[in-house]
Length: 137
Ligand SMILES: [Zn+2]
Image (cartoon, rainbow, N blue to C red; front, side, top):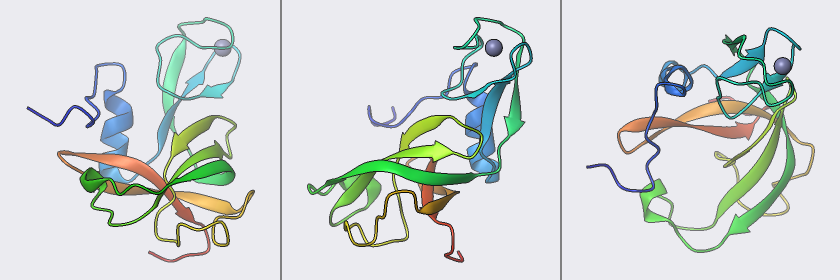
C-alpha cells in the first residue's frame, strides 16, 4: 500500500499523471468558454460545462508566492528546508507546488521569477515541481 501522502491517480486525473510520467504538463481546457484550469476536473470551474479536454501546457510559469517549510520531509528525500510555492502558469491557472534545483532561501526565491515545469520521481509516481527557467537540467 502506498504511503498516505503519495497521490493516488483517479480516472479523472490519470491523463495528468501520465503526462508527468512523460515529462509533459497536461491540464484541462474548457471547449465552451475557453478557460484553462487546474486541478483536473470533468466540469469547467468557470461555466460548469462538461465539454472539456486535456492539452499539453507550455510548462512556463512564474512564482506568485511561497513559504519555506523548515522541517525536513523524509518522503521528498530532502534533508533541509523545502519551498511550498504558489505558481502561476503561463496559461493562467495557479497551483501549489515546490521549487526545486535552487536554494530554498528568500534570496533565491524571487517573486515573479520565471519558472518551468520539471518532474520528480516520488515513491511510485512522478510529481510536478518547478525550477528556475534559466537553469539547464
Ligand atoms: Zn468553461
